[in-house]
Image (cartoon, rainbow, N blue to C red):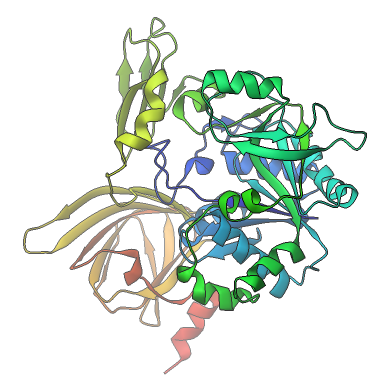
Length: 457
């Protein structure tokens, strides 16, 4: 069986720590068994490793999250790249073509799809592994995993089985689904042995390939990538699951929690105070998460969430925190903090002048031995001021060594790259007519290839 973890999300529900490139699964606000800060994706990948399942697991994500995943899980983690954000059906369809045409997975193989950020105990993955056996025993086209509810919840969708209890094989046939009922409906559904839909399901690879063929879609990964923008932006639930009649569900009677909002996330944090600042003892139930370099002080304020990052500052009552996505519905801005495969950066200042010129200032950290790709820009120039550490820089095929206090000027059109000989920090000031990621024209990524450029032409 192959496992595919879907990593997506717009980053609105845990704003301001999350943004378009750093969704909730990348926030290091949990604690590992060793007492270190850990993100949701790191926690899940660790749990898969502990179960010996990582070698058969993949992550499916958009381009904007690739470097964040590599930064947190390592450069060798298997990633299936979605060219643009659509929805879960296009993402899973593209994943199927990758497994078939690139990874060489047999159409008879069972594929399990799960979210990248479930907050669960280890037994959850044992139940995921059982889905392969469930598929074989049931003869179903789809096998879902449903969580046995702890209480009537209005936050989750429900899977309603045809029978009151699971048979000898542990699974039940599915009757229908119910999206986020009110409390009275939820109580009635639980009385009928309904299960929470946790977004985990399995199918034979050939089943989905057949669906793609009937839709006239290619089974090659590269071909489907080229047609990706033409696919309807629709969920897998609506496009496939709710149209399928031969479905079973495997109950999971263990701990499961969706840490999708500030109030649920802070319930699982080991400390109510992260970052610079103070929270007085009489601020009961209040949680402070501060990524800024200035302190935040909370005095006598109860049941609040105060979160601060370069993207903004949030102050909300815990019970009202789920409203953030609706409040920010029309709010758009560039990410002000990002993790990359080489380190991270924080935007210090951004100004757009009336005449159209833009100035963007970043504080950039590159870990020892890492490098930024050899690239150039058509619409901006840059000035780098080295703050700490030592590095090698290539400018138009010429190598230079730099250290703290040095200033590097990079006119537009100049090919450039930097390799950190030690941990390096520098201030980058971009000036140009359009400061966008699309203006990063990458020549090569590997530093050895960059050095070879010195001897060409």
